[in-house]
Image (cartoon, rainbow, N blue to C red; front, side, top):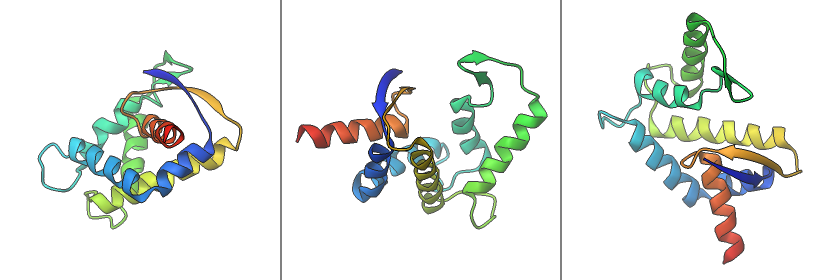
Amino acid sequence: MSVEVLDSATIVSFVEDEEAFSVSIRNRFAHLDSNHDGLLSYTELLKELQSLRVFETHFGIDVKTDPNELAHVYQSLFLQFDHDSNGTVDLEEFKSETKRMMLAMANGMGFLPVQMVLEEDSFLKIAVEHESAKLAA
């Protein structure tokens, strides 16, 4: 983990760089696709959703959450990715939904920079690194 400064423009710039965004999406998708069938099952995507620990922490402190509520939330999130409702998520669905979610985050952030603690392989961390590389060039 690291503390980074980012703003909505950093996220938008990363998502709009088709090459950089697509490479990151393909890499994450390949990592999640544990059986290498080119599709993400609920179980494969669930590991990623659980790793975010958004629902199990409150300001970084572990809290007790109803397991049935968590299961419902994770199922709902999976359905957001599964655009054709076939029970799996293909690469294009994963890319499209990830892009939509990242742009929604950017929209919610506004234009002022914020400091965030980011996981090393998160899409937000990759966006910050992408912006830093552009500035250095």
